[in-house]
Amino acid sequence: MTGRLDPGGVPTIDVKEADRRRRTPADGPRPLLVDVRELDEVVAVRAEDVVVIPMSQFALRYRELPNDQPLMLICASGGRSAMAAAFLATNGYRDAVNVAGGTHAWERGGLPVRRGPLAHGEGELPTR
Image 1 (cartoon, rainbow, N blue to C red):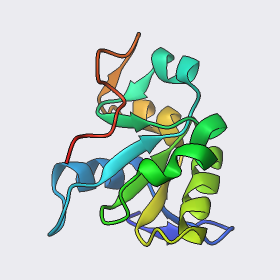
Image 2: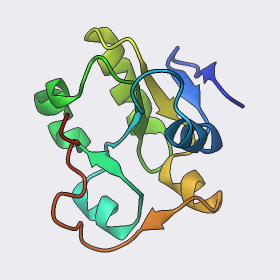
Image 3: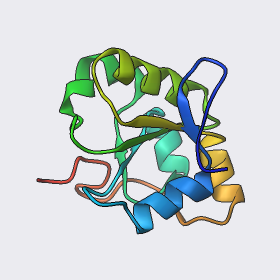
């Protein structure tokens, strides 16, 4: 599965497609993987190189995300990230997709994860 709309109309991709997009981006900037889980969840397990903006802060911080770069939203299983992707679309972000299955599917799929406290700078937006 490369892309589809979830029942709420949010563009959705699976974890394998999200990983492929990160490794071999199309022409243009590399997509950002944005984790919207709360910090304790992120510390437990996370995909490598995620930007962390918890749902509890998302409405206040979403403008930190670039509007000229593809965004892939991820949470534990796909529910919160679907809401975040829909919120971004409503607020003018043209290229935001939900990662179906979330971090659970990412880890089950054998994709690289990290555990434990975030290292200095980890989870922050890359400098442009």
